[in-house]
Length: 230
Image (cartoon, rainbow, N blue to C red):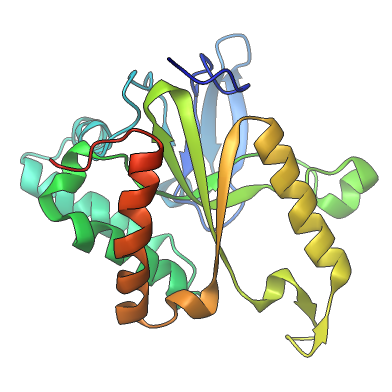
């Protein structure tokens, strides 16, 4: 039995991630979907290998990282990849840092065979800005975290600070921002993604983040038939 959602049987061709700023992209071959990162190319990662049937696991990501960067040992590949992914998280969001750390601390060495927690993943990319594009702009451009599970199931994990629903540096509520967020969630769900949101205050302290995720993550994996037993 597999999902009949829109994402089923639709494999990612390129995963653009670990980029805190909008990447400068051009197509080397539009027919073959070959893209090139210009400018600060080191600030953006592009995973361009086929996604296995059982999802994109840390072992797959680490193997790709080790081969493309010619890293001599698996231990060095694991450590350098972890640091590279963590460095892409925004400095003003300790909750995202705590989420990323807790994910790996909770599962330890089991992470190797679990879905890779991909940070700062670009969902939409438009060479024009939202202001330039106008009412046709794609508002949800980047996801905080993405998990690619077996059978092409896609899990989005968002950490929401006050900027998602306030203006004037958090002094006033902003219903328009909130409406945009909800519209973005509906769009993702219709495209076959499952979206789970966390309030930043839930994750502000590392101990609170770990306690929360120790309950949430095993339940999530059980719900989507992912084995976390190692």
